[in-house]
Structure formats: C-alpha cells, structure tokens
Image (cartoon, rainbow, N blue to C red):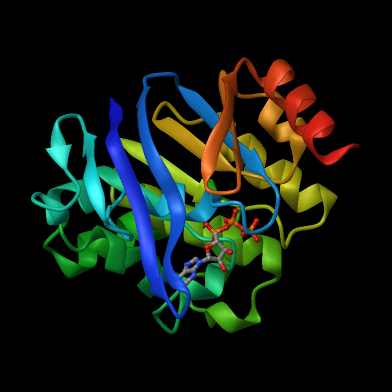
Amino acid sequence: MIELHEAAVSVQAPGGELPLLHPTTLSLTEHRVAVIGSNGSGKSTLARLLNGLVEPTSGRVTIDGLDTVEDGPRVRRAVGFVFTNPDAQLVMPTCAEDIALSLRRTIKDKKVRRARALEILAEVGLADKADTTVHALSGGQKQMLALAGVLATEPRVLVADEPTTLLDLRNTQIVADRLFSLDQQLVLVTHDLDLAQRCDRALVVDDARIVCDAAPHEAVAFYRSLVGA
Ligand SMILES: Nc1ncnc2c1ncn2[C@@H]1O[C@H](COP(=O)(O)OP(=O)(O)OP(=O)(O)O)[C@@H](O)[C@H]1O
C-alpha cells in the first residue's frame, strides 16, 4: 500500500518558499491509479515522492510501511520508475547489456544473466536487437526496453511518469497494453485521458494539490471542467 502522511514538498525560491505539493494524506490500494492535471501542476513531484526520487519536506511517504527516506534503498527496489524519456534510463551500450544490468542483483552468473536478458527482449519483441546499440532503436522500442528493464528488477509497484507522451498511436497502444497487463500496482501519470479512464481510481492535481480523487470518469469530467474543455 502507498501512503502519504501529510506529505508536502517545497523549495526555496527567491520570493520565499515555493510549494510543489501542499500537505497531502492519501492511501492508494487500487491496482491502477491515474494521476492527471495540467503542465506544472505537480504530478511528477507526486510521482517522484513515491520512490524517494523526491523526499518530502515535511510529513512521510511509505510503501508497504517502508519509509521512502529512512528505507530508501528498499523502497527503490520495491518501486520501479519509468520516465517519459527512455534515454533517461537506458545507460548501457546494447539492449541485452541494459536488461542484464537490471538483473545483476537477482542473477549472479553472467551467462545465465545474458540468457535471461535475451528471453526478456524476446518477450517485448526486441529479440533481434540484443546486440544493437540502444541509440538505434525507435522511440517506441526504447520505451519498451526501458519498461522491460524496470520490470526485470521485479518491483512490487510501478510508477510511470507520462510513459507514452513521446510515442505515436501504435506505440502508445503497445506500451499501454503492457502496463495494463501487469500484476503489479501501477501509478500512471498521464495526459492521455483515455488511458486514465482505464484505471481504477484517478487523482487530479492542480496548483500543487490533489483537487479531485474519484472514479476515473468522474475525475476526467472534473479535470475537463477545471480547464474549460
Ligand atoms: N526542484 C525544483 N525547483 C523549483 N521548482 C520546481 C522544482 N521541481 C519542480 N518545480 C516546479 O514545480 C511545479 C510542478 O512541477 P511538476 O514537474 O511536478 O509538474 P507536472 O504536473 O509533472 O508537469 P508536466 O505535466 O509539465 O510534466 C512546476 O511549476 C515546476 O517548474
């Protein structure tokens, strides 16, 4: 279970303290939770709080009781994070090496690790790209590789921050179908309201606070009325 206990984030700005998230208390138990809202509203800040990429300035965030600050390494193992831009997380020269990197904690033997990496690549349709440089992949292929790499670490929760924003319709569908096929709890930050509607619960963030927390169709309607769309 993901829990925010009066968790707030702020930064020091020239004009004084700037709130990025006002104190928020929340329990997320649903399989799939969407986070929607305008640019700059605070969605990424909320998402990054969940795996300790951002630490609360006050209050606490816990994942299955683990505190994101006190138990940082365990939280980061439990909560996988997918970025909008896969280049942010693809660090190894080839696709197989990138997946193998994610497996290094669970599989010590190098040969076994490579064999498992090849299986994972095959599962996401990248079998023929094993020894290809990650830079030669298309945007959709890169995002699938990044997602596969995160899933290879076997996280209990997956937080995805606009994972389809850079993708075309077909690749959006492929990545979304993979995300929605997962057994893990999914927190999905998205501007794609169709994807938000496929979740079990949706949070609308506006001006650094959660202004609506409801069933997705209700939250999407609220968001549309908020922006006058
Ligand atoms: N470290 C920081 N220092 C100062 N301001 C920050 C910092 N991080 C984020 N912000 C500001 O906080 C606000 C919320 O940012 P955040 O990235 O959470 O928004 P978002 O809802 O994810 O936006 P988008 O949809 O554009 O990705 C923005 O105005 C952003 O400029």
